[in-house]
Length: 179
Image (cartoon, rainbow, N blue to C red; front, side):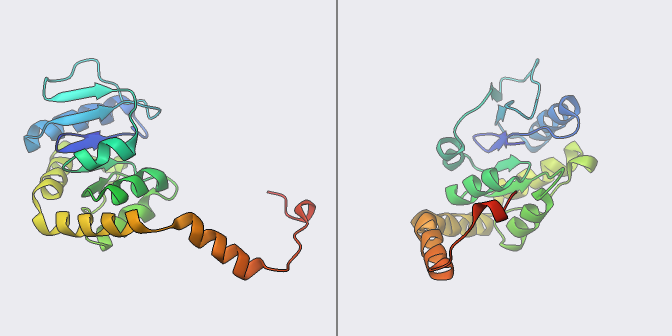
């Protein structure tokens, strides 16, 4: 779920796309924020939306997230990485797999709010999280600092160096390592 606005962006509807869409739209209204709602693969539905919400199917996170005041999403590793690299405060609404983990990490780093699990998602609590993410200057500064740090990392180079250091001289038989 990346609920978006010039303040926030939303994607991934989780368990009940219709209910999630309604909750997100109501939260944006309660928080007094404009939004970008990406319907995408998560199934968010936007038959009727206010003028303050722009609806699109998909958009590259790397392009949109730096332009947002905050991003709200499901907390998948890729979407979380895009938000952190953008340096944008984050609200994670996890519903499965590694998403609760990333929600905790984002909160512990001080670059996002306490996670808002989708199974208990309410418009008032999401609105409060959106207000915090868009108005907390210290959170924004931490998010921007982390984003600058991540933008300068050479992740591929670091991975190659690790493989070369740790697997140098080892012969790996692919037939023995089936996934």
